[in-house]
Amino acid sequence: MKIPDIKTSRLADAYTMEHEPISSVDLMERAATQIYFWLMRNLKSKEVSIKIFCGMGNNGGDGLVLARLLATNDIFAQVYIVHVSDNFSHDCEVNYERLKEIPEVPMYGIFSEEDFPKINDNDIVIDALFGSGLNRPLEGLAAEMVNHINDNHAIRIAIDIASGLNGDSIGIPTNPIVRADYTVSMQFPKMAFLYPENEPFVGKWEVMDIKIHPDYIENVETANFYTTLDVVKPLIHKRGKHSHKGTFGHALLIAGSTGKTGAALLASESCLRSGVGLLTTHLPKAAMLPLQVYLPEAMISPDKSDDCFSQVPDLQPYNAIGAGPGLGKSEETANALKRLIQEAKVPMVLDADALNIISENKTWLSFLRERTIITPHPKEFERLFGKTDNSQQRFELQREMSKQYNIIIVLKGANTSITFPNGSCFFNSTGNPGMATAGSGDVLTGIILSLLAQRYTPEEAAIIGVFMHGRAGDKAAAEKGMEAMIASDIINSLEFRVKS
Image 1 (cartoon, rainbow, N blue to C red):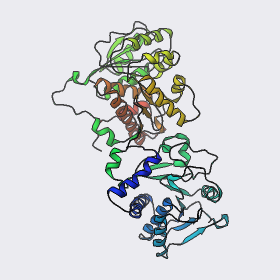
Image 2 (image 1 turned 180 degrees about the horizontal axis):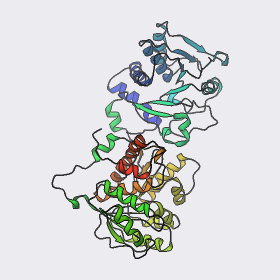
Image 3 (image 1 turned 60 degrees about the vertical axis):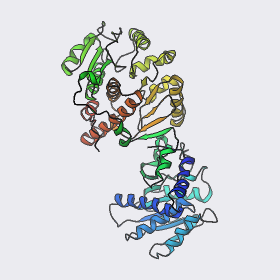
């Protein structure tokens, strides 16, 4: 799913009106109907008190259409029109006149703070004040209205985007912005939804398909995408009847050190569970027995050291290499990692202590094989590339570093972002807070390594690996609960069938 910027998104309506063709007021009807359907799916009862706050532009028009549609189902919302300008937009005015023909729906004008209605904690508040067209902080009556909407415990639902929030950037907490519990967005996600700082203003969000012209969706240019099952499904390789182990590649995992054998075990198992034909795990001698007992399907390449990674094995047999889980940061390991970076001729994924070592030797970044995948969490990213003031700056830095070093950066988080050397980025749709648990990153490394060995491109391996990792985490959370799940639950929930 594409994530165009707000300016580009707004051109979609004009294109659709010209090429479908459809009138603007009918397109508004179509969009608001999707909001209505969403609300009816989520309402637990018709016996609710709904207050719709409308501006005088097209976002307000959406709210007026919604009120009319609710009335057809005997739900009579109270509508409040906030007069922040002298005139309605054309489509808003058309729907204002239409709603006037339904006397059961009360409409009130708000011209000053004295007109503000009481909002009860059990109300449902619909924010249809400004939408995505706003590009400056709210002030005056509009700002006071937003503060009033926020000053209660009512459920707040934003149409398209919370009023006061810029769709392309991070909201400033001191600015008046509706604190939405739910955001129902039109056709495209907004970049603002993906920044952690905006969670208080966005809440849970969902995109409604309002049937923007398919040619526009197909041809509109953007560098940002949202990974859904529809994106991943076509990428999955079909297995031929006459396939064999060699068909699905031989992976080399370099992992483990004293006290961190578990990371090697988790990454090894997730690699095998993700479809690789053969896996060899290179690890310290002391970790050989635990791996053989825990995972007999894995072959072992013993290091000369009992305690750490200190020598690069013969790399010739392998289709892909993964390194980092539980490696430690000893001098021997750092030297061996440097040799690995210099000698590797196949796709590679680096994580955890491999990244921590590189962060202390930043010149090595320039020697990484092109399209190497690195999978830092935010603190590891900071150690590698420097501090930023917020997640938006960090994201732009991530994009620039992928371009500068010709690498793929998987920045782990709530919507894990994957940036590519061409400047494009995919944000992930799967996963949950229960995955913030020890070993979860090791599992991801194993999945991506497996896909690389199966000859997926590095771009495909990153996108599919992150999506399937999160999908397994969602399944584990549903079975165990987010508090109870551990990294091995993610492995046990891995499933690469994509029928639904």
